[in-house]
Length: 563
Image (cartoon, rainbow, N blue to C red):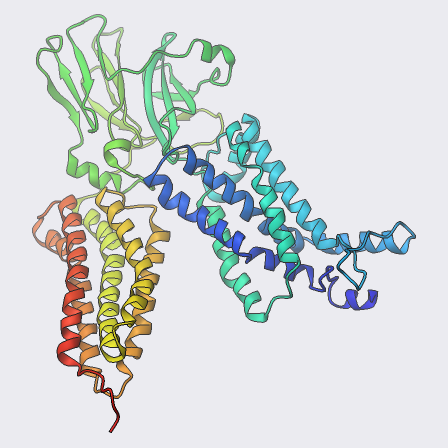
């Protein structure tokens, strides 16, 4: 018995190799569902329904799906051989033998090396999660470590996230259920390694706390100017998580050393203001224009106002494309607060917090200059960054057209082909095919609806996973439906070709607004996107009755009797 176990790599009490048991854990329906929930929640639900619930869903899902990944890593680091040697030494050395599982007639130990490895993985996940969420020091260390792997990141401590820890109990139950199952078939093992494992790894990377610097406020406090920096990746809050000060009115910035001290919060800066005036010249005032990148100036105490600085709406839309995960530019790319500072030599300096675009500064001579905010981790001093360049109209149109029109064109064309071929199949085999086609095509339609809603709201970034799933769930059914519709006793090549031609034309129509804009400069970028989305919706809605009409007209009814 012992020799047999040594030969197969140290099987557990079910006779499987431990690595097979861990892979079974990875592809268990609960683990797969947690992975899907993690990706869906972070890329769709959090943006659509920001709040406490969606914030905690990711924690619960992550605690369920992370232990199998940690167990695989530990297994690859030779943890299993060490555990097997320790268990074998304990038994052969005369120590008390582990208790037997009452349902195991072979007398294998109830707790084997793989069980210990799973327990260690769950413990490590729970301990790491607790350390990061319960203390600012743990969160800062995690931010620094993850920034090395995934780029600049900020992970925030939040004690309420510890409410998700009971999800580790579900992870352990899933492990026990996986350990009791038979060994994996070869194709299941390949699916676990080639499909589920990469998706789970993508879920971890895609849902890590990314840092998008966000100048959410600016105030005067104790004779200096403080800029509050938030993380725009966290859609639930626009509160600053760190403060930077400038003692030279916006020429240089440094981490505010008292930001973590208790007395700082006791004497927290006053609320930010969207309007401020010179102390020396009270009639000289400035104010922001809410939900725009614009500042107005008054020389008569607020009786009349004129635009002193702005980035117009067309340019703001183009600028928003250059920031990852931008979201609604009216919220994250707009002026939020300002301060006016009198200068000893005369004149005033104005500093404005502009969200993701950083700051804009007016010097004493009246010149305005944008100041970028570099993503950062740590407390080192930093100078201002060059501002993010605003792309020209041609570059912006090509970028947006590639991001929106190309995948949407493929999805629309594929869906039209699928609808046409489904109508032909229903005409040939009976209309019971229609419900089957609806079930197959509905996921792609739903993802397309989500994509259209996000794109119409101005979200052009961070949609890679929904885009890939949308294209896959529309293109694959079309590829399968074409040969099925073409195969039959009737000469259906022409009718299937008509469906394919209709799909090609429908897909080619989607990017037309962007092509017209490149040639004529009209319509605006926002209107071009609106037109492209409208063409996509119209093509899909029109394809349904046209496909049915085409199938009825071109394909004879199926004969009830054979000659």
